[in-house]
Structures are given as structure tokens and as C-alpha cells.
Image 1 (cartoon, rainbow over the protein chains, first blue to last red):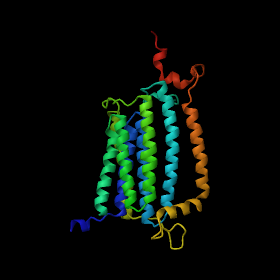
Image 2: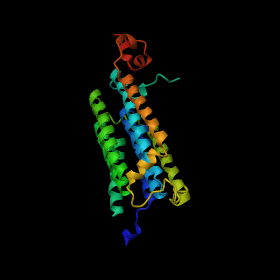
Image 3: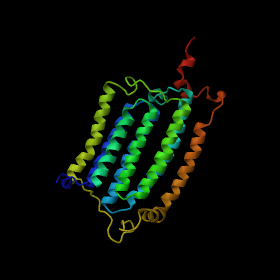
Image 4: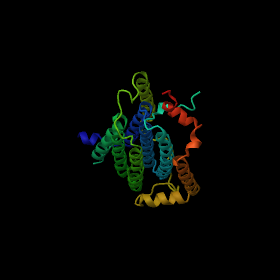
Length: 106
Length: 196
């Protein structure tokens, strides 16, 4: 009886996606280690891809999955560039946090 | 059955996400991230996106997280941080939680106004992007990628070349003479300027 009531609707996936996105956003704001901040960005990207796949299924539209392929490519490129910047930064000061990157501060 | 899969995989996703935010050791953070990525791959399978589930494991868990771990080990920043200082305490933590609640509240409001339904028009019968029952998702994905999105697909190759060149430029070792007046160095190395 309980199981018949609790059927998984696409809204559940969308809810999970928004929870994951919110957790990633909080992590990005709270943590100061640039690598951990970067992993939080990956978490947010993944929450959005889950949402895209869910909408693809809801609307019977394969384009949602095509967008996820592009998100994967952009995420891979972003990781390469971002880790390059972080390596260049941390090589000069191994304990650097996001607070130490203040060159652009007015 | 789908309920069981959703609860287990969704639980793994949430637990991994909390681990990413709350763990003090960066290596544990990376491993928690793998948990989340794996859970999302399972949810992809549950939603009949089999190809994307495989790509999710190969690209994210196999390549991106390994790259993160490489950088962690390369730089030797894998020791645990002081959690009482590192996740910003006090006012910033409260503001971050408020922002997180706002980020969560916005989609919840959207759910309430639409009863959790998608408001888009959806693919109509006859559209090339309509999901066809009985056809493998990889076949339809390839068709979409190499017809409708061919130009965007080719442009991503330019993006990847730029990323590779950029990574080489970034991680190249600069000669000593070059980075004396590099403002980044003087900003991140105040110790060298300190009087003895």
C-alpha cells in the first residue's frame, strides 16, 4: 500500500538535483581551499546534468541528453584550465587559500 | 523497484555531496565526490540514459577525479585542514547557509507553481529530437549530435585545443628573472619581503 503510493515521479529527480546544487553552492561559499571549491563547482555541474536528463525524459526530447554531452566537454576543459591555474598558484605558495588571491582587489 | 534504486542512489548522492562540503581532508573530499558521481550515473541508468551513465563514470570518476587526486598528491596539499578556521566561521557561514536556502527555495517555488511538471512544449511526433521507443539512446544521441548540433560539436574541438594550450602555458615553469615583478608572486609570498 505504502509502496503503491510512493511512486518515483520526475519531480523527485528535479528535487534531488536542486538539493545537490544547493549543497554545492554552500560548499563553494564556505570552503577556502581552491581545490575543494573546484570540486564543489563539479558538484553543481552534476546537479544540473541530472536535471537535464530528467527533463529529457519528461518531455521525450533527446536534446536534453545532447546538452549533457556538451556540459561534459566544457567541464573537462574547465578542469584542465582551472587545475593549471591552481597548480601555478599553489606552486608559489603551497598553503594558499582563496583569500590570498587578492591581486584584483580594488 | 525504481523507488528502491532512487532511494539508494539518491542517498549516495546526498551523502557524497555532504562529504564534499564537510570533510576537512581534500583526498576524502575527492572520494566523496566519486560517491556523488556514481550515484548520479545510477540515476542516469534509471532514466534510460545508458550512454551518459557510462560517460559519466569514464570521464568524471575515471578522468576528472583522478586529475584532482594527481594535483593533490603533486602539490602535497593532502593534509587535513583546521576545520575551525578553514570553512569560514561566524557571519560568512550563516550568509552562505542563507544563500544555499535561497538557491534551494527558488526551484521549490517553481515546483509549487507547476505541480512538479515540466512547462516546456516537449517534442512532438515527427520532430527529429523526439525520443523513439525501442531505439538505443546512443543511436539517437549520435544522430542529434552529428546533424542538429554538428557545428557546436565541431566548435568543442576548438575549445579542447585552447584548453590544452592554456594548461601548458599555465603549468610551464617560469624562469626566476621573469617572476620578480609578477604581482601574484609578491601578493602570495609576503614572507620573502619580511625583514629578517
